[in-house]
Length: 118
Image (cartoon, rainbow, N blue to C red; front, side, top):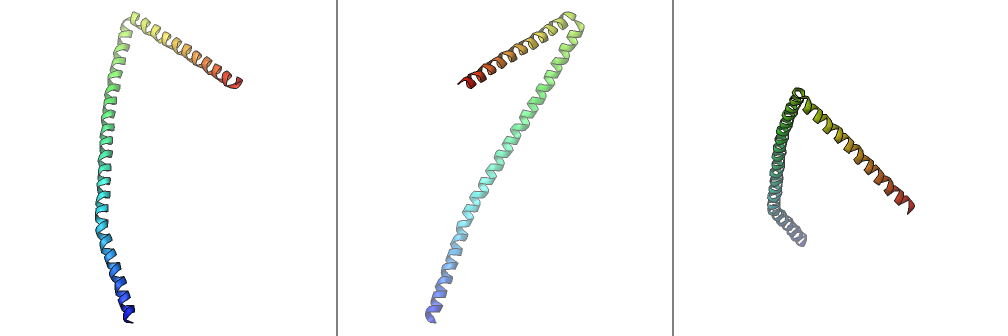
């Protein structure tokens, strides 16, 4: 009985020591985890602030480009020569786009034909 009581006391002491030591080990790990979460929150806030800044810059650019477009349209309405010049630029741009797409299509067809012939 005495040995049994000593064994139970020893086991209880071991359990209490383990509980006490894990409690002290738990606090630093929780503090590290809290610091990691805090750093993550700071990084998220920085990324959000950068996104807001970029949004503001893009809105300003959109406003600037719309102002420029309005001024060019106003000039083209006042001066027919500018209207003709803008029409020629638009025609050349569409022609260049058509040529570029034809070249890309031809290269793609040649590439497919090469793969099939291998």
